[in-house]
Length: 83
Image (cartoon, rainbow, N blue to C red):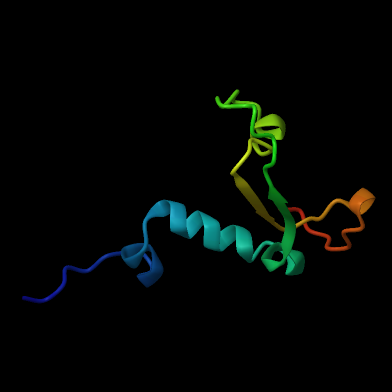
């Protein structure tokens, strides 16, 4: 059975919207594909998420990765509009 014609690009037919959005962000600028931050949560006494990202990313046993911009104050040199 032949495929029905579609106006969507091939990538849009193969991947869900979230994957396409991620791919678009990775092409935003040169630094967007570089690891900008790696953090390992070591605050084990905290047991519940607070919905505050700056706090929750430090909960014991968690890992936080961010592509794009690094923090210059911590010695990071990667520049990007993404983080």
